[in-house]
Length: 443
Image (cartoon, rainbow, N blue to C red; front, side, top):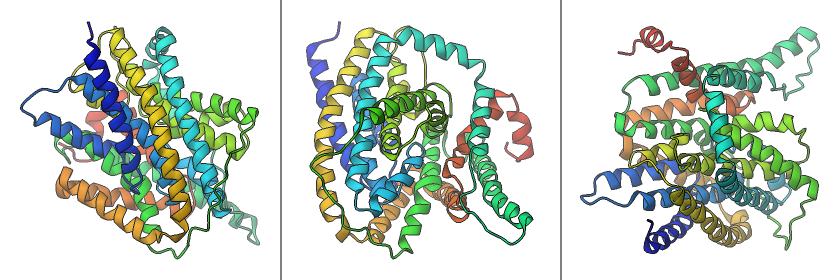
């Protein structure tokens, strides 16, 4: 039987976690898995055991804080992660028009609603989700492969490349598409070494992926900001934000589909899932899009943790669930309900803190030199990576940054960098790991 004191302590830890993560996520380039990695190492080195429910509450609340706080850094400082990469494009248009507050507010509102939907899905549709996960397990290989192929094929040349001769137009268009394929392959090779070799100690292997994610998605933008003289224009802080019923319904449908794909299919993050969902619901309009992006992120991050708490099964999806499973595996419905309560309370508290921070940032962002902010983010991430992984971590970060710069230079999708996890996982599912290790000289 679960004691009331434990429940209250879990809620309190959740409040601390969401406030801390919301503030820390303002640091450009910082991924929440890097912070959670520190927490895990700290707990492993403690002489006394900590109740795993407390760590689970801290983890899920920090994910919520990250989904809220990173909306600000991704929009104002252009430092997205793998799940918010598509959000950057419409939000930058809003930012240029002085409507950055509106873009961030809509995205974060979707995030809070996504947290609520995640709880409802896990509590009331757990049996269906378990059956669905069991159904797709045997088909994961071709689902992931189809997803990556669709992401690449659905890209359309963004540069009209008006040349005098048709073949030059065709060649210019295929430079962009071809470099997208190069990005997938290059990130996949990096992933092969991360998954199958000993670049980092086994107990810190996921920190290697965190360093790679920062290099692939956030670092290129930070470096670009250092050499850009662009200044954030004055931002308008409205008393209200307009969202139509159509925006909410369409955004919710797209967000749930995209987040659920990332939540249940191994290695397909919300970024890839959103590519499918936009086509599935024929999504149109920037507001609907931003709303769905925020919603899908929390379904992806928080929903994956809640999957682990479904009684009677073990479904590990995402790094946060992996961290929790290092300490214990939930077994009772009571534990699920406690974590769901933490999610709801943390979402409410996180939203309040987020709105205060957003108003403050909106008022002063035009005075902030983004070069200094980006430089601070670079220094912090370099120090964190070195502390966690040493020189090998810095090497991973540098290589990943070069790969992540390819989409910026050739104007192709940065979501192609997700090949860092999809390629090695597909190879493993296909039983090709020994052959691949032999080809790449991995012992």
